[in-house]
Length: 186
Image 1: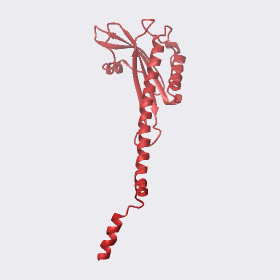
Image 2 (image 1 turned 30 degrees about the vertical axis):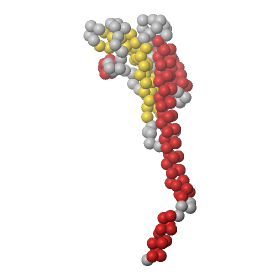
Image 3 (image 1 turned 180 degrees about the vertical axis):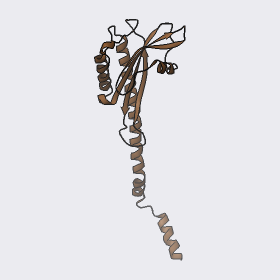
Image 4 (image 1 turned 60 degrees about the horizontal axis):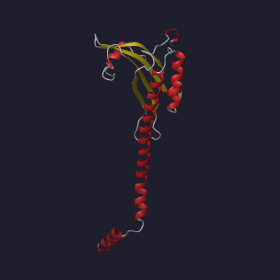
């Protein structure tokens, strides 16, 4: 019996090879942690890129004095795909011209067009967005640009596939309202 206790004590006090055992135990955890941090950083980076692209498109549209049309919408979707480094099939864009009616205290849609999988907005949907729209004077107009980009994380470390949605509104700069040519609509 004494011999067993002596053997257990010597096993307890033995420290040769402990670094190798610790390395085998901790290396997978460190590797997973590094990949997780990289995936989270990439998700924040992609959100930032998508937001900058939405602001850029909103600014470009706010400077238009000619009516937009279907080919303009296609070009805008292609530009969004280029700015976010995605395929055209992975991005969608919705542009809506909205005015405020102070007498009825409501936002009214002039037009809403989309390119991609998202539907155009109705007047009821505009009312549902009331909290997101700016406070405007009577008969003021804004252009609402919504971008939707599918995002797949680079590694499977717990983040799920998602859709990045940006909501940007801009006041027209050189005209009282941005128009859409309905005759060439989708």
